[in-house]
Length: 293
Ligand SMILES: Nc1ncnc2c1ncn2[C@@H]1O[C@H](COP(=O)(O)OP(=O)(O)OP(=O)(O)O)[C@@H](O)[C@H]1O
Image (cartoon, rainbow, N blue to C red; front, side, top):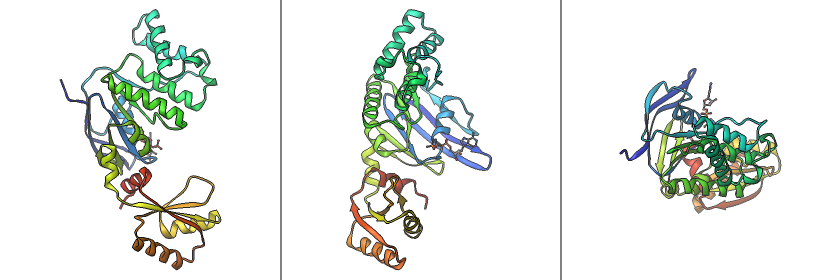
């Protein structure tokens, strides 16, 4: 019996002259939730597609300890949630009666029992996401591959998905998921690997990853988009995803580093409307680990 549910070694994948995976090696212990964390376009979906057998790697090898590997199946919008799962269950060889029960059980597990008879076209984004997870669980797989299972979910949806994935791991199922958010990875996964520039740049428990980057950040606020853009160019950092013209700049909060930041602001003649200093949070860890150079 292998200790690892999934072993991937030396995976390479490129599209044209763009190398997306550059010799990626990972071993996922059985019965754990493992998160592959990476920024947009870092190659997470490519990795899931290779593991799922939908895409052939240019080089490298993937081995699964178990035989049943579950992954998302496309949804048929014109059918109900129950029908989608029923058809998949029948395709897995279950007889009609067991397939109906299996589909109902999965809908219940994902909190979709009340939406079972609604056409998928009427599902919200979050409901579709949860139904997508249910499709990967048809046939009681030993290993489940999920691409951004918590993407676009509200906090309640995220909590529900977290609980489902944790329960699966407690039952001995191995869950491999991708995410862009360390916070999500930290809340769900036993181990996290960070993908950047086609390679795993860090791997460990969420706590171990959190300790890799001691620094926090300064939060700067500007009057308008133009000033923000100018500041982002001059200071680096990442603009906030809100409408408030904010910029997050790595900063450890020490007097020396704040003095240096203020000197750069003065030097660039930037008009800052507000400044606050924050202790490290998961986003800082993510930025530090996935920012090249
Ligand atoms: N079929 C393809 N043809 C050409 N380029 C591709 C193809 N699939 C992916 N890519 C490129 O490979 C890179 C990685 O894409 P991938 O979808 O794996 O990233 P990701 O980490 O899942 O991104 P996101 O978080 O935005 O979903 C991107 O630059 C993408 O444009």
